[in-house]
Length: 540
Image (cartoon, rainbow, N blue to C red; front, side, top):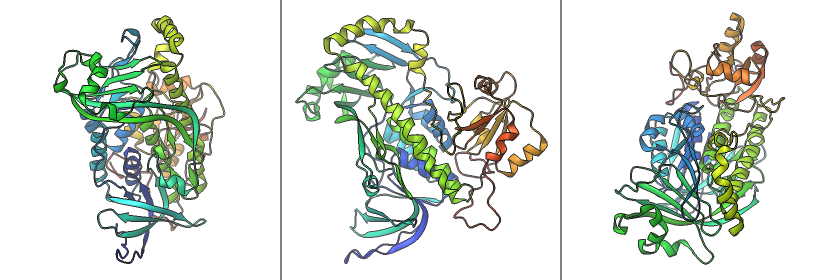
């Protein structure tokens, strides 16, 4: 894919041919979006200011839902090799005495993977970049600065960029642009969207350290509940550890750049390990914020990830929220570009993702406040109440449960019932009788999950529309799931979300996208009748 350069001497800019999608930003969100588009054969250009992986660690946790998405991308085995499951959560007082403990078992969650996973973000990004090379329709161009995103009413979007090594400028036009360019997003300012503050801001010191010594600590998350110096500790890898400390007034990261100043903070966990055996990988100051963009779309430009929302890290869902954005939007874009879906369905992206993200941010704020608020009175209450939390019926399961809220109603989520209804929720990645799981069979296509009998005519119609039939046999996980949802059939979208349910499976067929008409103009052949295997469309 060529981007036509301008004249570096005069600053003239020439216009390249139009590509279907430009993704701005090659962090985890942008790489996920590009990979999913590549699996559908959508020609995509990814632009990033870094030549290679950004080297410093940031995100360190993802849940089983996001692990499931990594499997969809084709990197589950590679991720397993660089990650380690977390054993649960401990709440500690300021003297590091255990107030409460919530342990996770070794069993896989509803998505077929461990429910809490620790990892190093640069290693994950390296996996995602290498995996992107499997998709010939996707091009990643690094070491460029995007300097403008311009769109006329209803027309293509012009993206102007500068080569950071030569200073030369160029332009590419796209039918759609995905702004995955982070908290200081140029794309967000381009569409006139501003961040709305949700009432949370705390300054924290984030420390990543490495050592060959074993710290002999419990391998779950340690959460120090203290209004003066709240803290978090967790083991990330074989020799990597992460600490986070709430900063006091007047403190900053510069106060802890060397081990002499830092060691007293981390010594309660390192004990007798000499300071010279501890390597500082990074110390940084972050202001943990709760913010959400006023609008996530303008015409053909969309915001994803930190460009659209910022969350405090207390439930470990910051990066995951961006990957959920990518999973929600890309299959819809592929359907529109292929003529399978009307463009109006793209409105459902913000309709679904904004309320979901807002609810997750609210939960993170609540946890953060519970950790840090109340002064001495709050500390006294935590000492009294926390040791008894495990006795509250269902609380341990709720604290450890990785299930996120159902998506709100939209053109692609028919939530007529509240409570136990399945619409808007993810279908579990359940085991099937032949040893596969749901995702192996659905493989990025629409799926009809049913415990009722299906006629040959309906089966043929599903195949004609590129959907797959998944039979929920009696006694199976999917059969129990349907019964709990008080239904016998569920229409599951390519992103794994239940679109709608019905008592009779034939009632759902009409809501499947119709095949494009013969000779209809479209950018790419997004053939939804062929499964995705993590390497691209068309696997057998």
